[in-house]
Amino acid sequence: MESIKNMFGQSGNPPHERIDEADASSPPNERGVIAESLDASSLSWSTRVQGFAACFVIGLFISILATVMFSITLNLFTFGVLYTLGNVVAICSTLFLMGPVNQVKRMFNSTRWIASSVMLLCLVLTLVSAFVLKKRAMTIMFCIFQFLAMTWYALSYIPYARDAIKRFVDSVIG
Image (cartoon, rainbow, N blue to C red; front, side, top):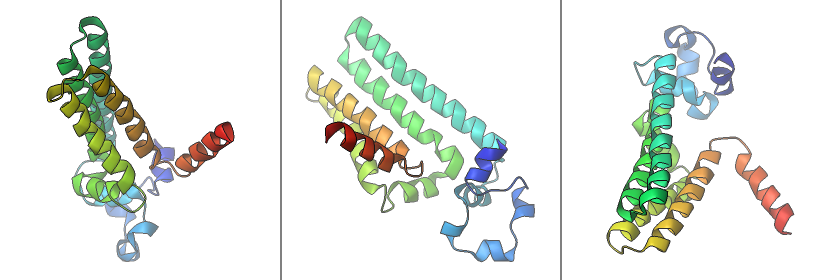
């Protein structure tokens, strides 16, 4: 746990002991993501991690349940709703770590706005293809795009991960 905190720039000290006048006035990019988030919330770090883990696991479970139910019943409506709901719950899990305002700011900063927009568009298009158009192949296609977009979005939070994936794909293709 301590290594995760240190990776995001937070020391092991509680927030009220860790920030002095110089730290509080430093630009946001010099302070860690976790340090900024803890300053804006009354939840402890362990509570935030537990909330994140619980929400993420629930979202993952709902998405897996959607896939299993679709393979059994072939009900497109249920699949589209559950798969998208699972992904939305998984996205909401990060609200525990950063808070809603910081989450939205980070989703639409210059390095993530395309990935975030594509991800949200895929969520909507999955539901539209299932409910309005009632096209099975299109719904499955948008679920695949949804998965890929969410993966690309998640990789944006890992330093140099997207660059590594790009280099790997370039080496395989070219």
